[in-house]
Image (tube, rainbow, N blue to C red; front, side, top):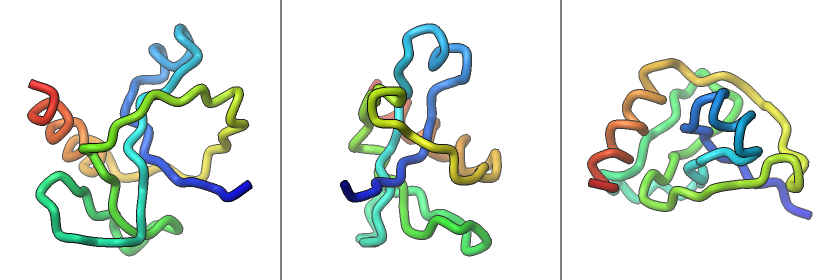
Amino acid sequence: MKCRSALVLSKKVFNAHVKLAIVAPITSTIRGDKLEVVLPDKLKTTGVALVYQLKSVDFIEWQATFVEKVPAEIIRQASTLAQLFMA
């Protein structure tokens, strides 16, 4: 099975309570869309988080693993875009 990277936007308390995480898929294809959040070069994971494709993921069923922590600014950017997108 192919590994799919995603940026987790939901808070830890939410994830623990409902056993789901709200994520933005990450792709290496950068289109320059305003709803993409570019990941910094200093991370192991490269590409952009697609905020317009939010998904809820059963991280236990998918056997998700933690890869790395992103800077708080990236989470703020993605969360702000997601709120604008969902409003």
